[in-house]
Image 1: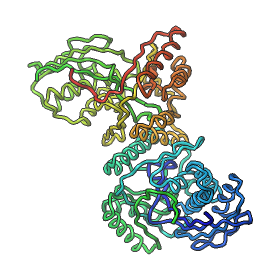
Image 2 (image 1 turned 180 degrees about the vertical axis):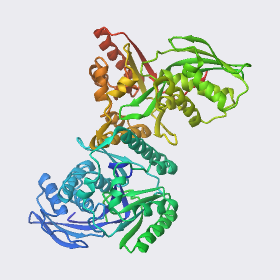
Image 3 (image 1 turned 60 degrees about the horizontal axis):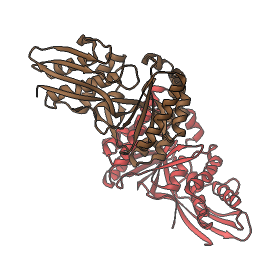
Length: 306
Length: 306
């Protein structure tokens, strides 16, 4: 194989109670990338569409991840990379994670699947380090494995795939405002009462159990975040209005995607998810805030060849 | 029905990462109680064997719970109660919870199953309030529902039943020392770093997922407690030795049962659980500490008629 064209999904991390531990992949939204082997070693990024990100390979998430894998595998080829961003960085939907994990997946294809998913996740985490200063795993693992994932542990890295109801849908609205990951991190308290932590992990247990058993009521009751959302929601205009409108119109729950500003809502089927999109949409339309909105299945697979 | 004889299981709460949220019931250990309707209203405790607990109904956990239910149901009868304690209070195995939940279950039988399990759990929690000063649900819910349970929420009370592998076994060793619940609570910090909390709920997610999928390796990796065990283990002689001996000999994991001093270890089958019992046993034998030891299936059912 000398060339591969791939799709790398957008992802939702910090899934309510699953702050810093759970994520899932979207089927309907993601980047496209084309990787072509070159005789000369090294990385050349020859095309970037849809985002203002660096062409220099050592400053570009895809370039960094590709170089890491080529070096680790002692590959005898270089790469030409074309990047077609379909959703913009800073949305809270894992833009850098899509680049990082899409690259890890694609280069692994060109290496005849030398690496396991957990190894690809580790490479992709180095891309996250370049993009946002910390090697977090939840977005990249979701983009590589697909579906719902739990980052059970970092050292050693342990990614647990969580099944989810096949009908489960997500509605995501992305208000066109900027929140920097560092700013979003700053407002989350460093210490919390044990009582609050217990309430949070009881909901993590409920959410995971509900996903295993297709228990939509339990999923709904468990989609509560006592840690990040109460602080971060103030960074997102009309968050409470959007969330309560979504839930009143049938969403199982709603929360902040990643560190925002996107807001996600889970619904038990497509009809509800589209109704939820309408009402989320109308909140921002009325408020005069520019936005993008997406309705998607949870992707059963992660990055894939197209 | 005028009389009912019941078995109320011992329970393990604070299951490692599931501190204050998860519990399970033992099949092989529990109290027996006999409840007989009387024409005169009120509660008479006519027999207590195996523990030095009050005969006065308003100071006895069983008496308090029975009276609450009779009053709530406006029953036209009273009760004679005989209590046969098969394991002693202060073990960390839910002695008061067995009395409370056994009573709730039994009186409900005499009332033709008027109440649901969650209602019975609420009554039994009032017994825990009498016994240890707080209306905690993890032991009593495990004793009523059987199997593994998750206390997802208190207000309103939400008990989630978690399936577990049918071969799963527990070994419990109870060193004959006293730890008061209040003392055990005092050593647990009131506030914890968010990072630690995230690591804990990632393990809760892993444990619940492993129980759903019979994934013994995942259960094993997830049986970690960063919150209570590091503090409380110092109250239990040779805790680290007992735990590491259990794990070296095949246990999936081990931890403190409830607030101690009992130590539990989970194993993937009976042979391993008995091997683990031998080595736990030998640690305390060598150290000259009196103890009881039990090997049991996880009980698929809670309190039951015998």
